[in-house]
Amino acid sequence: MASRTAQQLGDLPPDKRSTQRVALIIQYKGTAFHGWQRQAKERHERTVQAEIEDAIASILGYHTPLQGAGRTDTGVHAAAQVAHFAAPKVIPAERWATMLNNRLGYQGASYDILIRAAAAVSDDWHAQFSAEWRRYRYTFYTDPYPNLFIQPFVWHYYYRPLSESRMLAALTPMVGYHNLAAFHRAGSDRTHSWVEMQDVQCDRSGQFVRVELQAKGFLYGMVRLIIGLIVQVGQQLSPEDFTAIWKISAAIW
Image 1: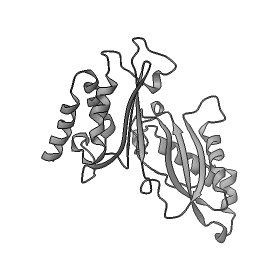
Image 2: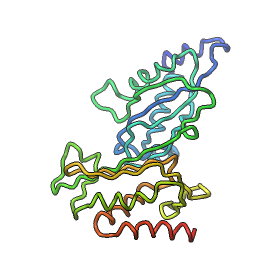
Image 3: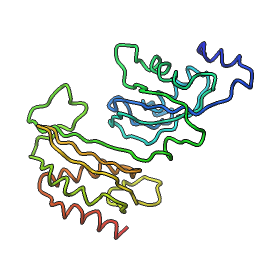
Image 4: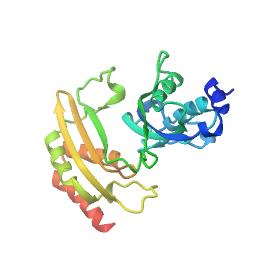
């Protein structure tokens, strides 16, 4: 059954149905989803994009695509994912945050997605192509015993000590424009492996080791591949060997 809002939109004259581009800032807990991207219907897997698109459709009475700034994998959380969609101008853009949160469970006992803000943007603004940077954070929790309150948001890594200074030394040469084919997973339709890495950070606070990577755009599977190898640097692999791995791969590619 169409919502009351959808019925009201259907009663509008054509000149009142013109659309505007609405941008959303989205938070979600990735453990609840099979990634960002909507999957084929027969797969029956819950995704962030599908959940929000369905909520939008429940308001409008029809489906409209939601374009995200990037695609996160299964289990990856987002503090401020950006996306956009087209909506009738008769609905003030800023109202979309409240309307969607009401349908996504924000008013209920629990929820996995939260729309932090909504705003009108120009028609030539694009969540993916207008983005100037994207930033990923991995947090390692190194205490021998797990912490139940943070467990969903950290990698409980206690097997061997991690050297944050060695990890940072290995990451620093990646800043700049480089061919990072060594961290390009198979299955991507991207035709090259060049990445503009803007910033890298690695530091420790007590039992927490934090790695942050910022780039204009990332390759398919790139962040997880980097983290998998940088852990070896934290243990015993030299920063020079880490750099040699991706530079040699770039020369072969």
